[in-house]
Amino acid sequence: MFRVVQEISFCYGHRLLNYTGKCQHLHGHNARALVTLEAESLDDRGMVIDFGDIKRSLQTWIDEQIDHRMLLCRDDPALPVLKDLGEPVFEMDSNPTAENIARLIFEEAERRGLPVVEVVLWETPRSSATYRRRP
Image (cartoon, rainbow, N blue to C red):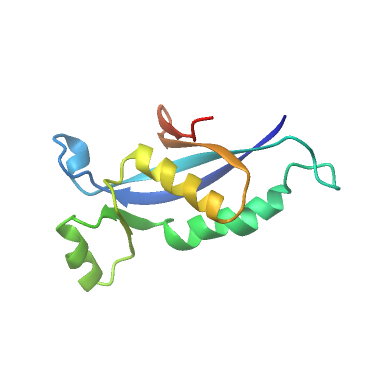
C-alpha cells in the first residue's frame, strides 16, 4: 500500500450552535488539513497522485469555497444577517465543528475522484479532529 499526505492551510470563521463556551460566539481559526491518499499500486509516473493534481483539485475548492469564509450551520440565525451584509459564508447542513469540517473536506475529495482515506483537521496547533471511512 502506498500513501501520500498533502497539507492544505486555510482560514475560516464559525460558531457552534447548542454549545456553551467561547465557541458559541463568532470567531476564526488558522486551520491545517492533512489529506491522506492511498493506492495499492502506483500510476505510470510512479505516483499515488501528483501533489499538483491535489492542489489543482482539492486545494482550489478549499480556496474558493471555505477559505476566509464564515462556516455556519443552515440553522444559524446569524446566517441571513451575514448574507444580507454580503459577507462570505459557507452553509453547512451540520454544526461546523472540526469533526464536521474534516468530513466536509473528505467528502469533497471523494467527489473529485481522489483516493482519500483520511482527513485530519488541525483547528489550532494543539487540537485536531479526524474523519475516515470505516474499512
